[in-house]
Length: 609
Image (cartoon, rainbow, N blue to C red; front, side):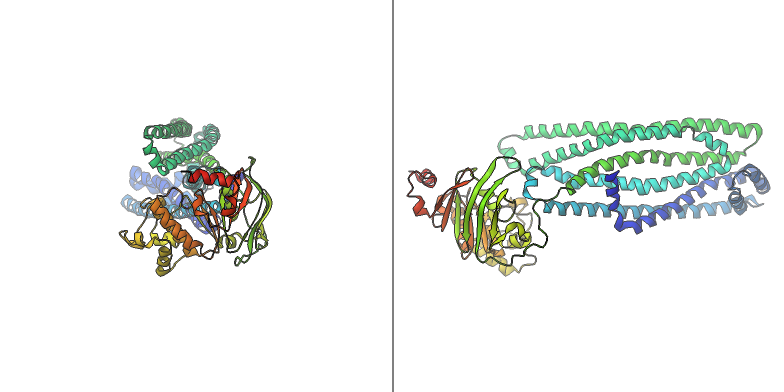
């Protein structure tokens, strides 16, 4: 129940609404019971006519003599029964209208208040999960499926809220209704009421059994939903590759398999859950038949009950069955909510290993140098990706990093904005260890342009001004001009207000890259990281992007990863990586002279005739 207690803690901001909802549930139950009890004087009036008042009073006192509720019963019958049956009928009709009006008003208020609470908690939990996801390091996302994370936010949280509804709606209103109807039943005949509940232990045992089965299976249902969401997300994201390789049938089969697994699991859970209601109703019908038989004998045989009282008792007992049925499902819903809550809280309990220390150093600028001191790094328990890296990047320098694929180039630059922390060694900026620096202030000094350009389904203007709030349009245009992007932007239907689609699918790769460069130029960072920013571009696009990069690098400390050595020949320092180690460093002219060096080998491979 620890998980469920954590769920209930999210209700703290809504206690006032919950309290009002409980009060409305109480009033709803009172008027529901009163509406049922009115059937007795109504039947007395219709069956006995003018003689209804006196016999009702005397017989009611006799039949209710053992009940502490006899005074209330007598008051109600005295209120509505008159010597004139027409007058009694009129009073009953008026009271019925008023009673049902108030009952439904309180019912509406109760459901509206609960809806406010439920959707408020859904909003709060989704916001909390989403904010927590942003605090998690990149290493977390490399081991988690995107679809699985989406499923926890979209699918699991509403299941959690169904448990809250079960606790504060079903578990409050339905017991109150049970009490109201049971009070009426006991006030009429405690013997008949006792007989009516001979099947209660069986219903409770059944509910407990079903609840245990549902709890075991509910977590599996959420996992299957996550599988379906993951396949769907991956297929839509990679739709171009799917179509290019003619894999539509394969992907459809994969989705069908995930969908079938979800179907089997949901069907199994639903089959068990649905067993509860019909069995409870059947057992209730058995008890009802016994009550009708025994009560009928009481009316027809010894006259211990009046017909109107017996029919009123039956109304109360059969009105008792729906809330009892609802209560039999409460445990199932709580178990489902607990299973879903465990998945969500597992995510919320994941502690980010990249976080600010107590009293971090706020970096206000970049003045001297970035230094790597014996830095080694591995992902989890894998082999070392970087080994004993020591180098210095002075302010204003252009440092290029080259090497074969898998040498650790991208990992090396990912350590600078603290996407990861070194496994051993340290990195400092102006003498401050990055682990002691405030993360937000560190990243505010750095602009990053990668090979995989990430743009959002928004306007060109908002993509360029991303992270800068309400930035003036003239500054956006100035950055776009510097990135050689202004001309093609103005050729778009709405210029800077044109929406470029998810991940910028409506524009070319070179255009996407230039918008990303404009974004970096507008941010105006003192430190610039370029991760293969010109790869996979045609010659014309590469020339335009390279010119934009030169504009961007002007006056900045730049760290450039490049496969095309022609783009880094004028760097102040070239670091050559192989198998996670710096095997060479220097200027282009010096490195090219080393006949058996790795840089010379890479250069000859690229420029051979």
